[in-house]
Image 1 (cartoon, rainbow, N blue to C red):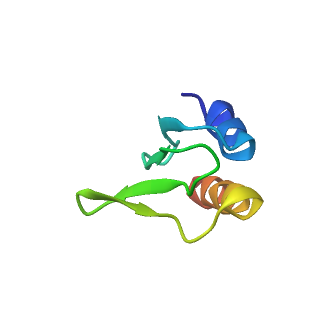
Image 2 (cartoon, rainbow, N blue to C red):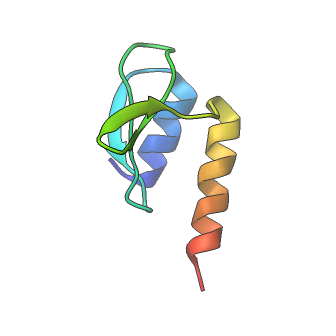
Length: 66
């Protein structure tokens, strides 16, 4: 999935599986359920959901650029 497709999937509430620009694996398994990310060989719920999660992803993108 592209970065924009992941953002749209987070907003839509539908299940998805993708890798962000930073290499983080993210997924939603059930409609309107929590978004999970890969950490230490398991999928754990992200501490943020919805628009807050999108803001966090944007902040990570900006922090990675020189």
